[in-house]
Image (tube, rainbow, N blue to C red):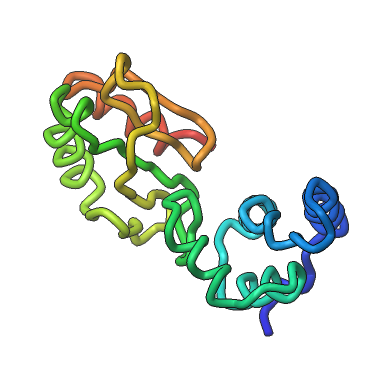
Length: 165
């Protein structure tokens, strides 16, 4: 087993708090919260993380995999320091997302679901993030949304991210 069982007491406590939100016979309802908490600490969800959640929530391992692989906010493979998720739904596409994403792919020399060799960037394709009026947009590490990206500002956006410490 890997280090998943060295999950911090703080993370275990957070999971326990989420479990308490549901009837005791429905511990599995906390699966999304548990996956999010573990991913926040570990950066991604490996097989041991999935097994841990299944055991901790007393649910089938396949059910945890179904959740972890259905939603694009969960990382079931290692990701770079900066996970960039670009919206490619219709409003963003109409605002030029495909051209912007092509430029990012060319600049980083990677495609969707790939990481740069230095481990700095991972590129992901995402569903609508609810900011259509500010298209196009990118979600950084599932937390920070950057909107109004254009062909004119995308190079500066990537350069600024690359130079951040």
